[in-house]
Length: 423
Ligand SMILES: Nc1ncnc2c1ncn2[C@@H]1O[C@H](COP(=O)(O)OP(=O)(O)OP(=O)(O)O)[C@@H](O)[C@H]1O
Ligand SMILES: [Mg+2]
Image 1 (cartoon, rainbow, N blue to C red):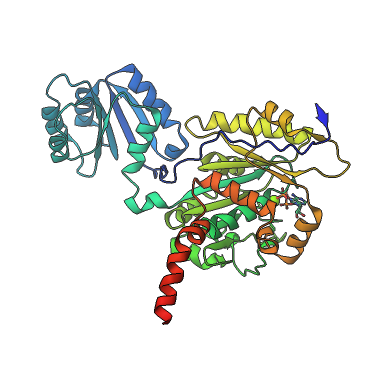
Image 2: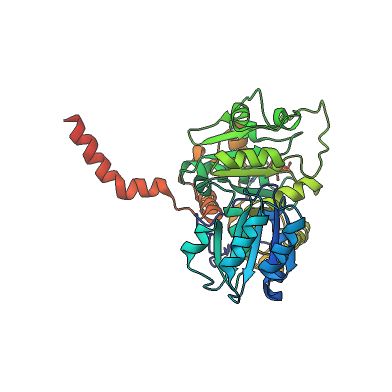
């Protein structure tokens, strides 16, 4: 199984990137009660309650449809959202009118059904969303989350978590270079969050000397708001900012599972793309950061321990995120002279998916970049490795290279316009 890499780098070509607009913002801490008529919908609703985007919400599932709901709310307080399944039998609109008499005004109602009534009539009775059945898990998740995300929020908040299968494999280097490509070449405003509070290198890699950073947010008592978070960011380029790690050992960094929740929620409201540089640890909060991200990139070197760890990480994350694209992975430091390596093909067979990129080992280039506080693309924009980072950026975000578009399509027009203006 182990042989020297033959450099026949095979990369995944069969992974469709998620459409850039297929983003479901996680729901806030809300209560949701579903009243289903069929076992199939009840099962789907229960599966939805396990989805990471509803992790903060409390979703309970009951049978009996709208009649059971009406009976229930005669005595019980109403939740933030009521989901009603109806098969169309009986007078559903009359049922909604009756439900309104026992519901709080702020409660939102989602209806799952088949042509139960003209949509107009449902809207008139205050129904917030109407989903045509049979529903899939993501239909339920999308509908509930959609009630709480402003329409502009659709464009913001995509979170990409990058973690190494082992320590020192280059996960941070990949995270920083990919974030650079996302912001510079794909034109998405991005923030890198360095979660390696004790030893993080993001500020060194971006040549920043930030006075503030993530420690100021995590150790303060109040919930951080957008303005507060904004002040903690170090601006690396026009489109890229950094929430730096203190890299100080004056204190220890033992956090609870949800320690970063408020920071992530706040950043998600204003930032189109967030890249998490997750340290190689398996703690409650690193696992939560990975499970809660929109996409995951695992960085691995082509050896046995990396392969085992990557497989374990993929498998546990796939199970925890059944409604998401599986984690993606890339191989880094491939082709190190004299080192026995597992062939890319054998690695991919064990992991049961192809790497989205294989990045060659290049100690001179990566060493120079690290010591200069530069990205690979700054050292050599057209280098094969810089293009690999762009390729990963595109795969992770589903966005095309806008700088290329600007260059190829718009450049001649812009040139003419500029020439016209200067005449
Ligand atoms: N493809 C590569 N070729 C040569 N050196 C590399 C390559 N990728 C990363 N490195 C170097 O490997 C070292 C470790 O990288 P990095 O800090 O990004 O790893 P990490 O996985 O984040 O480590 P940690 O577990 O400490 O967080 C750095 O010195 C970096 O410059
Ligand atoms: Mg690191």
